[in-house]
Length: 111
Length: 116
Image (cartoon, rainbow over all chains, first blue to last red; front, side, top):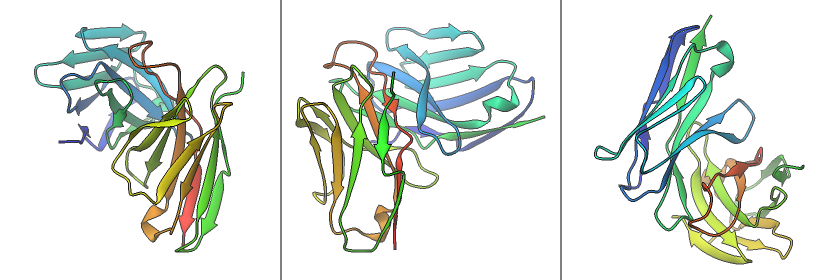
């Protein structure tokens, strides 16, 4: 189908790790992304992974990609209250013109 | 370095009216994509413009049209507005043709359209 799927809500305590999961749709997508949206703002790229990789680490962020299952995850270590936001999984479809987004996961971080 | 700018930030229209939204891409970017984000939803791809042509289109009716100017800025036009067109309209710019770079999109803060 057309939809990128992700769970809608996640609540964690400050200092814990957060894991946000996503299932994408097109096995030939070249890049997979995680975008972050804070209230009243547009989306901002958090991190990305190229489709020939299975893991990428960037400071507190770890992205895991399972191409066989078309599954993408984002782990945020030592989650802070400032990480509270909506996180969107997205894929760049083959051809390179169209980026498709999931519905977003709202992350709540409790102090 | 100015990022992506959109105008207006908020507007209210009535059913049947027409609206034009504007976008200036980030400096150095030549590609503009438009997205519709309904409340509580993810951005839905409307279309993408490159070299003043519509390069790809999402699943939106012909009431949604656009334009790209020689300076790479873009407009989104929506005719015969429906209540369901109420949403945040996001413009995103990027660089170059497919196969180059990471495809990262740089988003503006959006134009919030309310249709009464």
